[in-house]
Length: 388
Ligand SMILES: *Cc1c(COP(=O)(O)O)cnc(C)c1O
Image 1 (tube, helix red, strand yellow):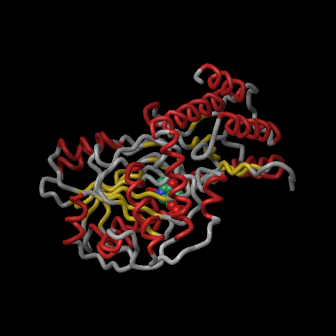
Image 2 (cartoon, protein in one colour):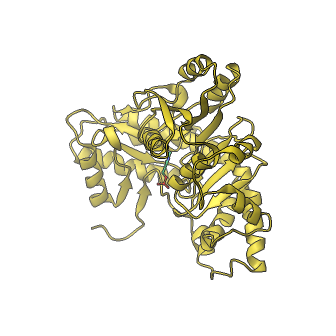
Image 3 (cartoon, rainbow, N blue to C red):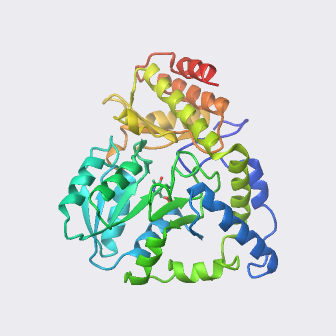
């Protein structure tokens, strides 16, 4: 194994945690029912809303993102409810399977894993549902298995055009804090988030940003829920507390990560990610390889999935890069296993971390015998120089 220097954790989450956040997390744990905690709780609950771009409450769970998915469903829906979902990739499929296990009836718009949720298909399905049998529309904003970002405002517009009252539930686990997202302006009812991607934290926090309409739906929803129930959490949150033991040290980290995002400014954070996304795509094309995302409007700025020629195994390339250059890249998930690898370029990341990442990829592809043109890294550097 390689020793010396730092490991490059370039999977699309968990992402590299800044030293400032690590130091914050290392502080002593405090009494989660004491006055010092209430100050911390109120502070993070207040400030986290800005990352979602909402003034409505955000619920924070000690959970992975998957827990926050479940919370979004069980708080708003009832057994047998119909929901509309889109087959954008692996994460959308997992969320759909969860919905089915919970007793929901999921109607799926099929997809080829290279495009986002199709607003035209959404419009057609919603317009056809004149009886308003769909109770919710579920969309993954940034499909982390494919590097495709769905156009949420156009899905919202499809709901509005049909005059359809279904709730809009959006997974932003790998876009929050890295790709422009607006919970309130886009009329989203529940936004699902997680800590370990754009928010630069370790895994362990799940988020639900909830609209007034979602809170009203929760009063009627009959899916069984206990731990995930918003109501007791919101009641305790009013005083800065939780009904159970929260992840105190991760909340220290969240406070620091929020400060870092505030210092840089969200629009600068998004611009930085857009620049690194574009530089990465130029590198991939410079190597003569294909970006998986097939629609120019839908490129993810937090990760890039790179398609390899048929006879080459993407996991072998990843193995070589890990062993030789001490860098982790994302594996191909589900039906993309072995066909793609994924470069994470989100979170705590700058121009030189990107060039180091792309340098490792270019060398690894060459060592693995994948027929590439040299010059991918050069193309990325030229773009970064010109767009500073
Ligand atoms: C990572 C991710 C998840 C799963 O989150 P966990 O924290 O692993 O439970 C769900 N959806 C998307 C889009 C993701 O990127």
